[in-house]
Image (cartoon, rainbow, N blue to C red; front, side):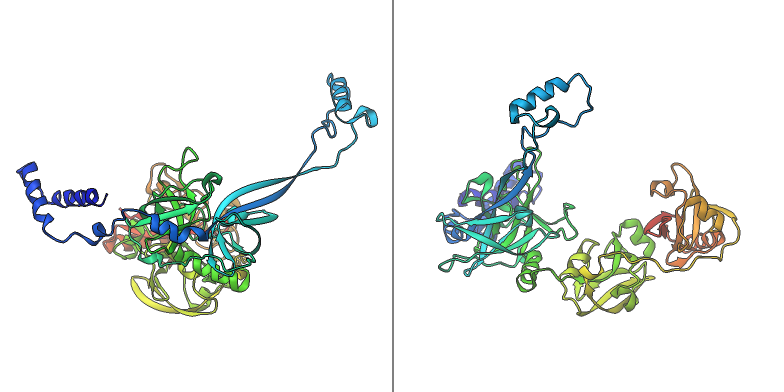
Length: 508
């Protein structure tokens, strides 16, 4: 296997040198490479996973989650149908035979039937004293959880804590002797192409080992606010959920969580939550029995190429602040709508997906440096983080009605017609009194504004972070942007309820 792998590496290396001599040149290149030291990746290709499987398998467990389900007994009361239908005699005779005659020919009411529903998953021991990790969805709604070990021993488990956002649960059992356990590794150091091994309980077949490579990193599958999955082609099936994904040193670098499959079985696309994401949650669940995530108090949106150009960022990067909670930490620190966060607490924010994860893993109460781009210039703001769970409920707006607009002068630009906000336009488009700006009254079909989903009743709040109060402000600002040589302008658009978003529109 190792020799075959080396041959493949060599062939690929030869293919990097195009030549008009075709296969003969390729053969020369292969011969030249053969005398040079092989890359470290080729030398470390495993001939077998047996030693690794033997080292870690005893720490991998099966999880049995039982749930009591209450259902109506068959043969209970007859369906609640109107009397006098042609089915009266049929149903009365049926229910007499099933349960004896009750009042008015119906069977007496039977007590609800209770039955146990069991689900199977995987888990692993991280502390010899009895701490077990699995997915939250494996034990969701369970009334009883049992951990089954490789030697057949079964222990009832206590649920220490769970987190739905990263789908992690911490269990505790009370063993008579120390348990085999495994440790987490550094998932930030893994590379696409690295070998990995999964151990778990697919389809109830405990102690199953599969192997593959890291196919991709930083996958967002829209399963939660902190998606940052590792993708692997190691076979993961139903029942593998909650099981470990090991590196070649026997360290857990991820927790197997989900698969992409049109058939329900493995097609080589599995997803695992990286250790860097889950370990902070596990520590909090062990210490507090709950999560205590940092909270910045902002709404964000991605920065695409058009937004990056309109803000002078050069290339898409960072997280664009689309709204600031009036009672959140960011408001007190001076972060404003339109800022682009490019660094948080010393960590680069490459995209809008990065910011929630970084903030959530930052300790509550910590004062951090936040680097933002504001009107083309970088500046650093200090923010003392709050706690997410305390700030998740939306706060009501407290702005006063805008009485500055007293007329309905209509202007046109970018395929839109817009006018000032007045009592009449607010009523016509159901715009809240706290929303300020210039209302869009018409959007031409096929225009850039229409392509960006702008519609009648939307309100232009800002253009390039400058407040718009009158239709003339919009026309003037667009002229200024065009004269500056920029191809697009960044609009802050609000709906009638005050929910805002950024939209980049071309000024040509």
